[in-house]
Length: 471
Image 1 (cartoon, rainbow, N blue to C red):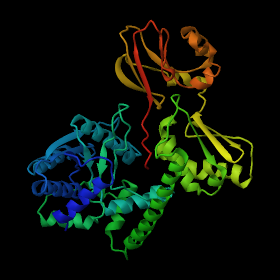
Image 2 (cartoon, rainbow, N blue to C red):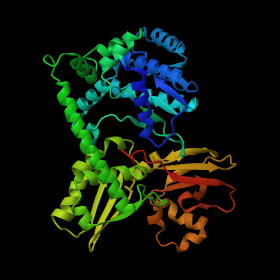
Image 3 (spheres, helix red, strand yellow):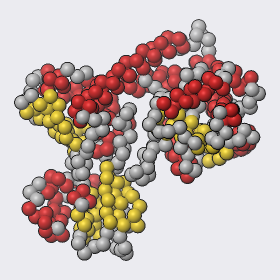
């Protein structure tokens, strides 16, 4: 059984692993199962004993997968309301019957986290708590192992992280996500609920070993070791060893950032490019995993890829080995050009230094129209090409759009609109694929801070936030 003192220690440990202050307004992702009901109970007791001013909310997602799910969600809300928690229930709407969605687990997770984000923003929630426990950690490890995940994927769930969804505004901070029960096996959560006479609600879909792969492994974990294909102790030992290795790799990635940039954060050019240098002697002694993770942590803001979080393996298994083979193994001094993560890589060795330059990969002519988008002139930000946040404020009745710079279409009229740019010899290179604001004709070139003199408009542009800087 988990005591309030034990919970207090784990709860406080969550905040020691993040840069945010201990939140005053928290929400619990409440499914109604034994895990989340245990978390809700422990939090309510923690509030009563240690922090009466703490404001607790709960958000229950009704997937509509079962006929009785709506009634059950309301019962869950009533239970936690009696504990001083402010409940809320959200029903998700799918494009078809959830039972007919082949990748239901993935789709449901995406929609669930999007709803969590909406709820937290709308209620000024400073942190979301989820009831992942040690059994979830093992299930995640097994699934990722079977999916041929990298060692960073095998490191599993973190005690403190952020909600894995993109922000809706450029300066919005991601919602902190905490897992205070991660060190406890599910059996202790069950015993805590039984000892305190806490009601929970079993979701029959979680018990169906044929519904999802995770359900299958969950059923195996419930069996005694001599009957299961899983040996819990061996997996925990292996997982602990993986964590140790990953922590060492992350320290080396951090050291490499400090060596290259002088800080843990790198600076990106206004036009969405990134350049840096690494001594050949340093690169030749780097492990592929360290250099791959270094690149993964810095390239996200300039990548147009919408699946960036899945792309790390491409770096470790393809891109970095090609770089090492070209410059280290073959001692090649010819420049190397690669395309990964929707980014064009230009790498050149000059004497004993490797020069790296990254920019958006060239846009095919048939994709320009797809990337172009209309923009609201009332000052609301728009994400362009999944790279640049653009904010435009202007009084106009004309349609305003944003297009990626195309020298064939834009070079001449930009120089007509901004005569001072006629002497800019590298105009097309500097503006390649960057946003151009158009209202009948060229109105603004945001990355150069250029707005037509006769147009009273306020235009701002900035790269999207890096969601993977500490991954």
